[in-house]
Length: 91
Image (cartoon, rainbow, N blue to C red; front, side):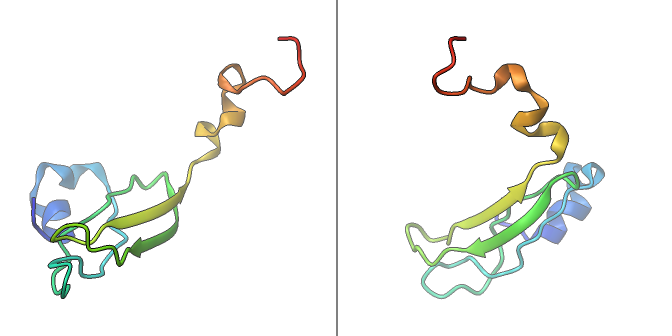
């Protein structure tokens, strides 16, 4: 979309979703970043632990990485039937 997060969150169909754009660092062009065009949009139910623009010029845009924490209702503990059985159990 090559646009700023504020444009995405205010003037696009995404505006009604309550998403957050935690990253404000420039990502384009990768060889001399001047514009913030790459985003990871987060639901407000997720907790941002870390956001980083990676200095890996593998294209004309720098990659963005985030580390998030899921709400308790979405962790493996909330879905025991989907969790792997402990090692050594006969299940």
